[in-house]
Length: 199
Figure: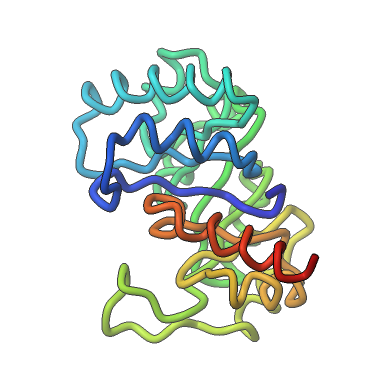
């Protein structure tokens, strides 16, 4: 699972959210990005402390999202930011993070994110997805262009599934970001079924 970033959305989780995080950690993805955008920073900080502990026990990297102060308060050095937020923090602040990611929507965004010290980026959305209803995916040619523009790992986001994860890797991406398939467990179940079929 080293080519998968799991992005959380507890509203898509049918069962207990923290138990789902434990199960995701058991699958050993590259990392879990805690992206609960509707929470206040106080609420997010409380949840983040619990998720960080679960990930630590499971041997999986937890990447916090959006809240710079929360990451600093929890002494956590892995953070993912919208590019606009990344641009607004100081160089000294950016240097505090060993893992720093940004959401990018063009090759120009990706180049800028790399200059600002990102250790990886997400690029999207690549395929049509319910999260972006009415907006067509940017496609694999877009992904190839972004991957060629930077030297840091690029993770495709938006409509990534077991059917197309190999396509995004062939396009030059380090892997893909999974949200709904991680929250309901279907992505991992299908992968295991496919593995059994190959055997």
